[in-house]
Image 1: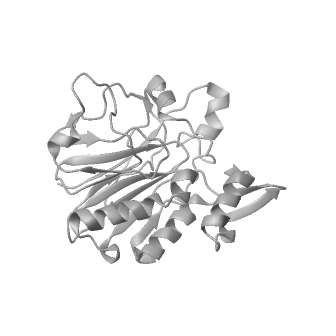
Image 2: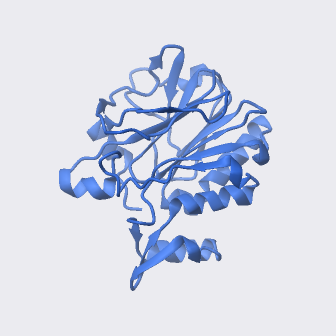
Length: 255
């Protein structure tokens, strides 16, 4: 995926605001970027900061399928004298109260999971690389092995991302998906020879359903970050125009 890496992010130090609060279940507090405008915040040393009783924790995203387990409040804190994220992964899981797991996106797909039975929760960053590597399945497997979570008990929110109306990919991405997912033709809308628009929200939804999560427990924000650049940061829309792009932050935690 053509997406800005964490080195660019560290240079930009830009994040969007949380504009509206949503409840995933009665036991979880989540934030997804559904707001009415973009705001810039300084990202220097943002991870590990406390907000009242809450501690924000994330990771240095690398478009991998690696999952980080946050076992306690101490692990949610950054290393001394380190600005920003110092753990490398693209998904986080925990069941620790009063921490907020966070992922940052600017066209990639943010996913938030909650399990009302075990109290476990997860945040996932899935671009086309993470989606093709089935990072959501690896996050679910980690929830199962660490906390005994069952897919049928999970509820998942899929946030705004570059979508099939705007997100064009080349033959390398198309071929990879068709090799890994033989039934993936419905994810692509051909545009020109060797190119197509891809629906990553649906691709991740398909994997969630295959894992055992009921479609009724999967909630998708029907918004494209490239189309609604007035609301959301978009790497593909903004990088060439402005030379810098912020990030949307999606978080989940339990009291």
